[in-house]
Length: 390
Image (cartoon, rainbow, N blue to C red; front, top):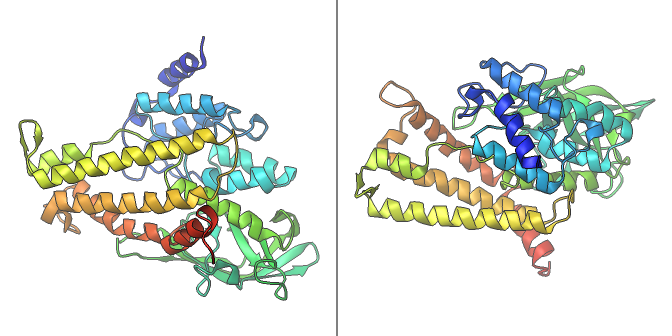
């Protein structure tokens, strides 16, 4: 039996019917100690996928992963799309800190954290930006001072996505204030229940609060939680940002079937001879679809050209920049399709789709800031990819 046949049979037997459709309200896939599952089959799907290692299919089996080759992982993704199965688990654990630990973590750190990430036991958040250190991240001032076998951390982090739900944080701290700003930074992990950690959600114009400010007041963290060498955390931080930008840019993303933009446009604008009645909208949708297809093929070609398991390159900045603009353009186009129905904030005269799309349109504006602003990505592309002079 081929691997494709094996995977197909396993999915048919183990993927619950309600998982083969878009997620309902509250059916997130981040996991964590405080996770709730309005649909019990969501937890069942997570447990079954984790047991096979399919939540992290290319991670080594000794850390709970599937141990699959790049080609076999692609087969798994294709077979999940075939039955419209949504991911069992997503989040920073899988897309950011997990890959970084595989590359830089000690064996003890890998054994402690990676299996929990695979199972969805822990929800992670990122402690990078500070109120005075955004684009110039290396100027961060959160201090970690030695105290026996521990560090005592003081400072604050901002725009910490999901910190109000997170169980652990991966964090940049300054361990040598006298060193050049890139050389005195360390990368450390800690439990969010550690005394001295407090979180304040930040409400956005979309009405949601995915971002937070996190305050660190005399937080005691064991030295063994430092990833890589002390004062060498900037190397880990840069690599993790590449993983993050690859994820935001759509590399390895899910493609579960939902109602297409063309179908939505026909619902709102009508159709003539089976086509969207509005010629202008029809042309814009076609242009967006062509661009999406070209972008997806470019991302796929880049992945196929890289060796199996290879870390992302500076191309992740290009993909992040382009993926950001594509997503923003998509929601601008949806605004044109829905018209005045996308201006509602609440009320029975607006559907759940309309209210949700309005919030997602507002939320998309943050895409050009999170994971490194578009201006930062342009600088990286100019310097690291095009080789332009400083």
